[in-house]
Image (cartoon, rainbow, N blue to C red):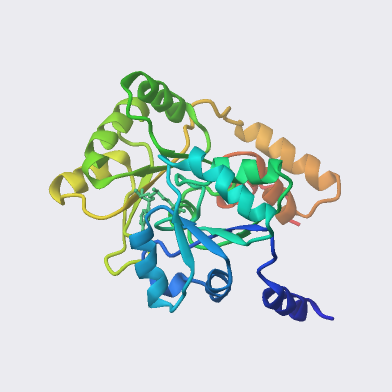
Length: 295
Ligand code: SAM
């Protein structure tokens, strides 16, 4: 059987009794609700969701009929034993949230760990997630990144997280609500400096989807003039302060060394660009400038 048929048969044999499924739902655009997610949700015993009225509306649009039970941060610990009991009886449970992937700044974490601890399988049916959607469209480095979700509101905790974020070398993703956006931008500007790269994704996947950048200062000025409305994900460039700058001389030495070790020029440049903050174009310009044989 080829791999494509493997996938089809997996889909047909889903859902599996006694499994907890985490199912991604759209973050705005209903076209992103996958056929696999819809098939799964049409065939489970129970769907646990944050707000039953909200999720019922989504499911009715897709003619999905299932028993809904509420599962949110205020009833998590009361619900878990009941859901585990259903799994023990070989029932199939799906967990969805109002939008996106469960367990990403949304309920799920405690249920997933309790399910695994009780010896049941957890399967994720992937779907849209605002964090990764914003990240990949931001133009900022994606090789390594950190996710902070919503920052804490208590002053002391918030101050210490903001300090950590300001020193973070990786790209950082932050969720924020519209009425707190300007305050967060002001705070980021103080700890990271006005010129730190920032890309803000607004209303991802929706009609008025928008990207605003490219520094904290520019984003602040934009949203001071245009009242923030809708949903926002911030993608903040990493701190460059702690990254040791490699001198041109060391870069040249490294290129020569890698070439003598058998790498082509382009592969040597690829390796060094991956290890340092230097672009491939910059490294090629060094080779030209220093007149190193470009073979
Ligand atoms: N679980 C969701 C996910 O996978 O992305 C996140 C849920 S969290 C409660 C909601 C926050 O995600 C919003 O306040 C906003 O910061 C971000 N978000 C959700 N949908 C978005 C969208 N369409 N555009 C931009 N940000 C969005």
